[in-house]
Amino acid sequence: MDALIQEFPLFWSGFLGTLRLALFAAVGSLVFGTLLASFRVSPLPPLRFVGLAWVTVFRNSPLVVVLFVFAFALPQVGIRFPTFNGNAFFWPGVAGLAAYTAAFVCEAVRAGINAVPPGQAEAARAVGLTFGQSLGTIVLPQALRSVVPPLGSVIIAMIKNSAIVGAFGVTGELFSVDGALSATGVYPALSILTGIAVCYLVITIPAGIGLNVLERRIEVKR
Amino acid sequence: MTTTPMIRMAAVDKHFGDLHVLRDINLEVATGQVVVVLGPSGSGKSTLCRTINRLEPIDSGTIEVDGEKLPEEGRALAALRADVGMVFQSFNLFAHKTILENVTLAPVKVRRTGRADAEKNGMALLERVGIANQRDKYPAQLSGGQQQRAAIARALAMRPKVMLFDEPTSALDPEMVNEVLDVMTTLAAEGMTMLVVTHEMGFARRAAHRVIFMADGEIVEDSTPDAFFSQPASDRAKDFLGKILTH
Image (tube, rainbow over all chains, first blue to last red; front, side, top):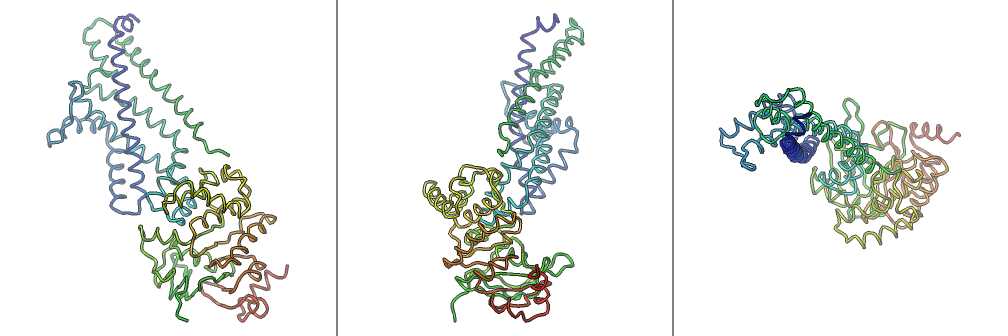
């Protein structure tokens, strides 16, 4: 308990760091994952291939490997990320986390697309909407309603996965608090880790509640 | 007669796997004509209807709408579909849009009509099919008959050259069939070119200029309603009429 009180500023900045990381990665993965899902149901074979390839690679690779590729391998081949407040690993961390999570978002959204009755897309095409218009105005809005619960699980898993980003060097992130404090040898690991776990719960539990509210708000009116 | 038919199908063939669902279909529908397609289930009549706006692609042959060959998938096909109204057995109203939004969506998105004009025209159409008071409800809140009338209004909102009806009353409770048929009969009387797949013999007698009878993927008879119902030429048509008219 002492550790939490005395090192509150450190925990607080870690909390904010994780929140920031999670927000960027959540927005990135939701947008990109939805785009990938529309690739996967597109009438154009090359787009379908890109979607399938992305999902196959990122869903089946360990997140640690993905993050190391973004942080260390990509810069070696000339793909550099800008620094964030002097931290070179922030954007690679966000990008890696978003790229990995997008594969899961894609599959959840695709399940939602498949759950929309095919007559909806047929009617959309029959009145002259293009594929993109039909997907964007008729199919996706209905699909997203049914995928809020699974997407919530994906995003909560992503918030927890963001701890790995701290483990490889994004300082100012919650899990890196452990490294900073246990190195001093002053506090027992148990209280530090309990404090960190509580901070994660403070992010993930309200996120879950928020998703429930969202789900009720966009329910199909009958 | 050298005028261009509204619909022309020539040597059209289609398979679903091993099933030869359309066999060498040749059909011309003149502008303003109302054609009813009859036949036992599995005869290919719904498929025929759905090939005309390419909801079902064909294996071989030619389909033209108003002299224009059906384009491949893409923008040109979308533009052609905008001119061909379609009414489905299961209504397929956009479930997350209100009735008025259902009717105005395509004019705004496809025709680039201004929202105010689209709503004015949409309300006039809802008035015409008798459900103007349902404008702000969602499809699931309406009865089947009301939904199908809304679907007809949605198709008409695009000012189509031709209307396709794919068993429009087959999913309705019996007491709602007539309210939909009345709308269709009025439309026919106003000169709309229509191709109607149906089991409603009364509608065929009353509103059709021409009856097509299909069996096993082929057009077996092509005649006037009077001739078809009083003296069908083929055994298959006699058998079909015998089954449905005896009760």
